[in-house]
Length: 265
Image 1 (tube, one colour):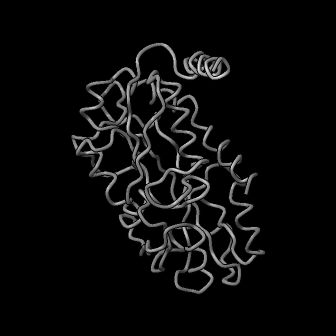
Image 2 (cartoon, helix red, strand yellow; image 1 turned 90 degrees about the horizontal axis):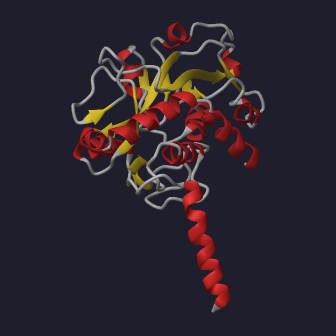
Image 3 (cartoon, helix red, strand yellow; image 1 turned 180 degrees about the vertical axis):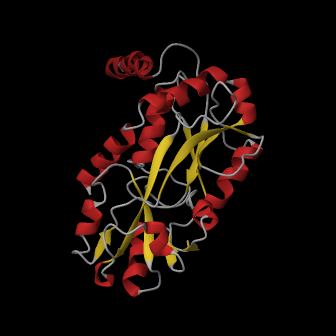
């Protein structure tokens, strides 16, 4: 009994070390229910451990922003995330650049009231092609893809932007490996994927033994924000602003988490 009491006391004393400085501000974070390593691991509603590089980043951001308790993670189909955020069923989810945003969604704003492009995660999209097609490595990706079918991951926030660019998008596959399988079979002419930092796709390409290569020029440089429900923002502006500022200062951490997962694969 004494040993059990001592263990309980130790846990109580340790808890404030990770989240201290006030009462818990609960935050429900929604993200896709698909296995997309190294960013999101696992299938369905269950959150596995480890959960993925993007989940690690979100947990670190919440921990460093005054919420004083870990986030509640909610996995949903990609098509439901934005609706769940607008309805207040979740409090936060990643959202990519769009022509306009619902008034029920809160994004960081600059002094002029515009969406703050600095307090976002950079998202560089690159193009992968078959080596046997002999596409010059320095080709302009957008010109090369004109009239061709490009594979993109299902539910990716960038897919709408790709279609606005006039590209023919096949987003039926759920992850990069499935898209690359389509590329090898000739069902798509190229695949787009995000590049967290230079060279991070090297291990993936190595698995294909040189049959798939990356074009040197990025297709597009875009951004992803951690968007909040507008009502949640009005209730907790201090914590939300702190999280956006934390991401601005620690944006390169995602690359560190990605590297950590790649070392364990």
